[in-house]
Length: 173
Image 1 (cartoon, rainbow, N blue to C red):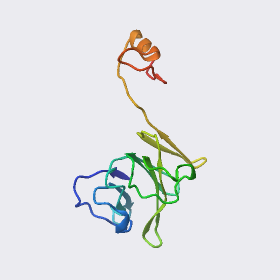
Image 2 (tube, helix red, strand yellow; image 1 turned 90 degrees about the horizontal axis):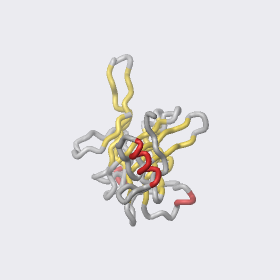
Image 3 (cartoon, rainbow, N blue to C red; image 1 turned 135 degrees about the vertical axis):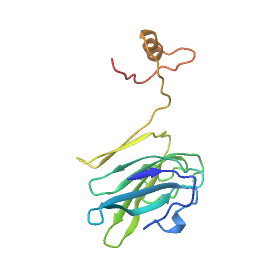
Image 4 (cartoon, helix red, strand yellow; image 1 turned 90 degrees about the vertical axis):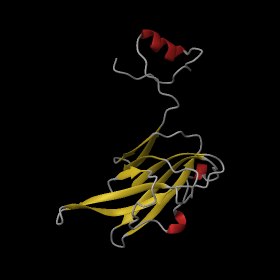
């Protein structure tokens, strides 16, 4: 699965979502498969997804069934991201990160949206799918510091005038 946000509108759309769901400035997602008889890659689907003011994608996680879970960037209120079967707790959200499930039916060559929801307050940066229980894991960070030495650990743990106290410190040590 390839995922990126192109500047060009010349990317081919194959088995795409219906045109009314695709803004011109949206995130682009493409699923490729290897055709062993032709010994080449083929496009299973390629489509655009998103809202006019939010065209940045952050990641894709794929379930064992082949469903793609697309994580989109922070969308300011009022957000025009199309919601379909949203998470009930967030059904009235007007801004936030976006999460969309795309499913492809090989019998009918059709792509559909299982759900598309906004998650208020989330600054996403990564997504993962747990095949054991079907859970979707989202993660993000407000700031990332690259520093070294014991004084840096102290500054991050306690905070300073220019560094806010951190919730988590990770590193090789």
